[in-house]
Each structure stands twice: as structure tokens, then as C-alpha cells.
Image 1 (cartoon, rainbow, N blue to C red):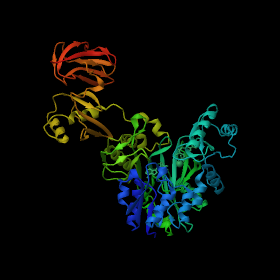
Image 2: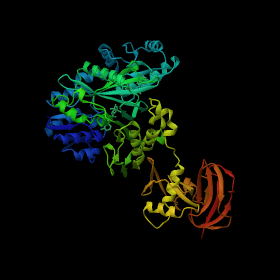
Image 3: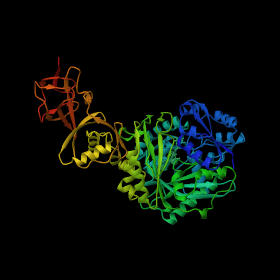
Image 4: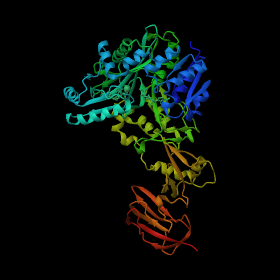
Length: 618
Ligand code: ADP
Ligand code: ADP
Ligand code: MG
């Protein structure tokens, strides 16, 4: 077996590889950019070499520096992980030419599968069913349009060099083709430096089914069953599982056999994935599953396959690259249980999934399931690389058990102040259609409203926040909750600031069990900064320096708590406004007297209208 391994990657996959290498007694060498210096994977490797600055093109993609680092450290092999240079045939060749072991796909196989059109041609020749469509060299808009018309709409235009869900356009009618083609070509040229496209029939009720394959240097190829990656957003995977729901034994047999045939056709060695698209409008049927593309690397979602087969795929990679035969024959592999993986991203679903970067002051994962993460509490999400924070991998004896575990785990994630999709994932995994296995690639879009958390705190969040600030004399929020329950019965109104807005909350008896730390409340995967109302914290810019109390939003005055001439102290509640089921109290900005009162109960007010005026004392 190889004695040492340089990992040409970062984050969670670098850590994942280190874990197995250590188990096998293989010395590990991490390479990293300057901004990644303090990351766990750098510390956990036996050695680490800084190879450049933040931008990937100046570090993780610098082939010359990677090879120099390998030579300096006496590395025997290079593992490329996924992304970055993992499917770069020239790099694979350079590694091999330098006398190193390449723990990746053979360069010829990477090339054969590198372009989607050539890969499909090759598969057709090998007798693998491919998605119907046009793969021709004639790229004139006129010809492409004619081919799309002949295929019949809807069609999907795909960049032949595409990946990561980029460079794809669905077209529903002939009239929209020209414009979609032009925009797809622009994106393809910009992202992949190659504007060539192919056209495919757009499969209805599409499910993404892929098969994990493995080859060794002795010509053996096996499969490790299928995964279902239909839960996608913008053609990118969000939740993956294995096996695929609704896959019967005969269909599985057919798809897995097609995958093995595909891999064997390119003399595949190492870990690879054959991706298929299935028309699941009826059910999963062997005659409605077509080859889409091959990924010539280990994939992000490989843990679900590990979970149901009990195999360590990184170990398989290292053994096969070292020249050993596959650790298992086909008849020694079986499916045991069900597994699901959710990708936790640093992004904010409430703002259209904008990426969120910054320090990870709080980073807590639940126990009892597998977590593959590249970061730790106290670390940071930088804007330079992939926004994935962690993968949560749940395993159960049955699919409902795995889904339940995954949903509960996602709901328990606590991250702050970086925003995440944890609540979105928890909702997706708990959605009745998901639990029932009614999934296809349109699932997320179809259920967006139910999955994306609101920008305003829910009643449950307000209840938990209000309960948490109840004065009980105890620092511990749990004591505070118990204290509250003892006093339950009498209604209590509490003013609380959540995410910079003041709410007047009528405390009820069922306070949800939120987790509260340092002014942040975590509930069902959501994170809300909150606190007791502070006098210096007047929401919405309501108090101008001159003492004018302005309405922060259009709404209705539901309470006027002062009279003209009243003396008020800084922080006193003056007026309560309600809009869209949200209440907001406006507070006195300083000690003084109410010299003017314009608000009256029940009145509608517009944003910015003057409700009262306070004159400072003295
Ligand atoms: P990438 O290289 O970006 O992964 P793929 O060809 O694998 O591109 O397609 C990505 C996703 O796009 C698939 O997982 C599927 O959701 C969708 N897709 C691809 N081809 C089709 C098709 N012919 N019909 C319907 N959906 C498709
Ligand atoms: P899959 O392997 O499931 O098809 P994707 O195509 O979504 O996964 O993932 C590959 C992508 O992962 C790369 O294109 C890159 O953006 C991202 N990536 C690369 N390296 C890392 C890393 N170390 N940690 C997290 N993400 C990475
Ligand atoms: Mg793909």
C-alpha cells in the first residue's frame, strides 16, 4: 500500500480522506491556502504545506505548486478529493508522469467522460440507454432549433462542458428557444470556456438516480447500488439518499448493470458515479431510465452508500490505487437499511439563498448521526470556497426512520451568526411528500413556500424568546422556563426584541423548548437574535433625535399608553402598532414629557407618520 498521501483539496473532504488514511497507517500531507491556515484539516494532517493565497486559482488549482509540495514532502500519492482538480486529465497525467500514484480516475476515462456529448456517444456505442436528444457537431442556432423542434418540447439545452448545475436551460416552447440558447451559450462560454451545447428531451417527473461504481486495475468493475439525488435546487443536490425509494429488485438490477457496463466501456478504475435521469411519472421502470453523465471522482454524497453497504469508499480508493484488487466481489455486497444526507450550506433561504459568510461563533451539531464537516466552532466561512458547512448523514433500518432522524438532526443544528439552510433542510426532511417518497427534481420548487422559513419570527419563536427573558433571578434559561410554568395561569405580556424588532408577546402555556445562548435563540434549525427590550433599542428608527415618535411601518394603532403632558422615562412604552400580525411597541427615546400625541387607538397610520413627540427633561 502507498506509504504517504498528499491531499489536493480542503475542508470536509480533506478531513474525510485523512480519517481513512490514518486508519490505514498512511502518512498524510495537507496543502492549503493562506486563509485556510487554521482549519482543522491542516492541523489534522501529519504535515501541511501552504501553497498560495486565497483564490483557488492561486492555490488549490496550482498544479505546479501541488507537484512541488509532493516532491518536497516525499509524498507517494495524490488524492484530489472532489471539485478542484479531481476531473482534470492533464493534472492526473502530470501526477503520474512525476512518478506518483494518482488516487483518482485514469486520465483516459476522465477524458472520455469529460464532455457530455462525447460521453453519450460512447455510451450509445456501448449499448447503454441515453437520454434522447441531439449531440451533433453542427452548432448553428438554426440547426439546434430544428433539432429541438424535432425532439419536441420541453427540451433541456446543456453545455457539453457543463457541471455543478450550470449551463442548463429548460425550454417549453419553440418560440423561447432562440433566447434560451443564446443565454445558455453565454453562460457556458463564461463558466467553462466552451459554448458548445447539446439538446435533450426534458424528462417529465424527473428523478435523479445514480449508481456508485468501482473498478480496479485488474479489470474488475462492481457497483455499490444506487442513490437518489432528486431533491435539488437549481439542478444542485440538497438531500441525497440510498437506496432509491420505489426501486424494485428487477429495475435495480437493470440500472446497476447498465452502470457497470458504462464504467467497463471506459476501462474505469477507482470510484465513479453513473448518473441517470428517470421518468418517474408512472413509477421507476427500467425502460424509462437513461444515462445522463459520469462523474469520474468520489462524490459529495458517497457517505449514504457507505452507510448502507458498510464499506469505506476512501479505503477502497486507496487500496485500488495501490494496485490491490477490489475489497469485495459483487456477490459480497448488499444493501442494509436506509441512509440520507443533507448538505448544510452557509446561505440564507429567507433572502433567496444568498451566501452567508463570517465567523462561526456558534457551531453545534447534534449527536447520534454521522457529521462530515470541514469547519469548527470559532472558525470562519470565507467567501473564497464552496459554502458547504457540513453533511449530516442519518441511517435507519427503514426509510421513515432515516427521514425522521435526518429531520430531527437538522432541526437541532445551531449556527450563528452565519446563516444556514438548516431549517429548510429540517422542513424538507419532515415534509409529508418527502416522507412518503413522493419526490422528483421539482419537489423543492413546488414546496418552496412550506420549506423556506419566514423572515418574521413565528409565534413559537416569540413565545420562546419572551419566556427566556422572564426575570426569574436565574441565569439559566431552562430555570427561567420552569419558573414561568410554575406561574402559569395568569396571562403575562412581555416585550421582547427579536431580530431588531420589538414585539409585545402574550405568553401562553406552551412555550416551545428552544435552545438559548448569549442572546440567540435556536429553534427548529432557525436562529434568532433576541433580547429584552432595551431603552436604547428602539426599533425601526422610530425615535428621531428630536423626540418625534414615527411609525416604523404602515399599520394600525392598537394601544396608546400615555397622555399628553405625561412624564415618561427612557424606555417607557408609548404606543403599540400592529401590522401583518406583528406587534411593535414604540418606546420613549429619553426621559421627558409627552408634548404632543397624535396617535389614537384603532387609527391606521402610514410608515413614517408622527405618532407622538417627546421633549427632553431639563
Ligand atoms: P451537471 O453536470 O451540472 O451535474 P447533469 O447533466 O448531471 O449536469 O444534470 C444536472 C441535473 O439537471 C440533473 O440532476 C437533473 O435534475 C436535471 N436534468 C438533467 N438532464 C435532464 C433531463 N433531460 N430532463 C430533466 N431534468 C434533467
Ligand atoms: P457531487 O459530487 O455530489 O456531484 P457536486 O458536483 O455538487 O457534488 O460537488 C462538487 C463540488 O464541490 C465542486 O464543484 C466544488 O464546487 C465543491 N467542492 C470542491 N471541493 C470542496 C471541498 N473541499 N469542500 C466542499 N466543497 C467542495
Ligand atoms: Mg450531474
